Image 1: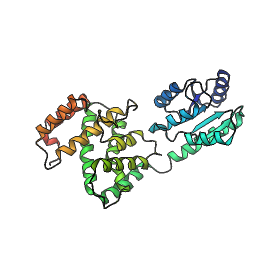
Image 2 (image 1 turned 90 degrees about the vertical axis):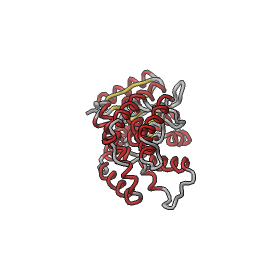
Image 3 (image 1 turned 30 degrees about the vertical axis):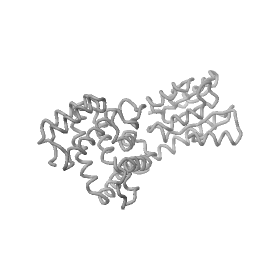
Image 4 (image 1 turned 60 degrees about the horizontal axis):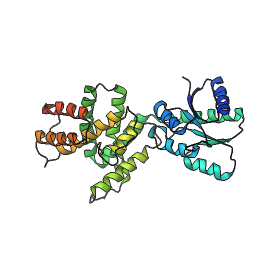
Length: 310
């Protein structure tokens, strides 16, 4: 399968030259001449590498780099910056913005191809460094050792979330990623002091989410990273992400609602199951939860035997 390369260049002759060079070597070129359009293309098509010109009419290339690095699925994507500016300060600015490498215009085609090949090779090697299932097993072993209840809760939430996802006919590969994300959602607790006392639940919750996300920042697993960072957020939360890819939205919403249900249902001081569903129903009417996901949960709650005992 040919590698996809996003080229953001507003100079037509330069674009034609770069496209001709890349297509000659069987790269698939995704071309754009406008910054916001290029960012959207990157979100949707997830290229293997990007080539970005610095001198653009609206948002410059540095700003585009920064925006791309904010997208979880693209944080490890190699970015080559093209510039006519050769001073050290511009190179430093490119690196600070998230660029992987840079070329000065006019560039040599051999140098361009060499850089592309080298960066893609490194990317490929990283993707095969260690099977993810081994990383997962290692982290779950550490989490279970630290707090066995974390694993038990994760397993409960996974069972409920999986049933809802299957009701909604979501793709199995997406459901699998969602389940992994739920099991790893509290992985940030490994980075917190063992003797921590939860005197401020919000600060503690925020800390473990950010720590967990940073642990996975270099993995190309956007569903898992999104769930780790936002599994406590409902649709009205200030922190709920506004720019999620369409395919991740239902996975996060299912994980968040199932976590919320688990917190209520398995708290010994909580009210009865019908009362809990009444509370969640009212929250749904207020816009906190996706209505389709709520109704799927409601159908499952109508059969309490499907739920683990409290």
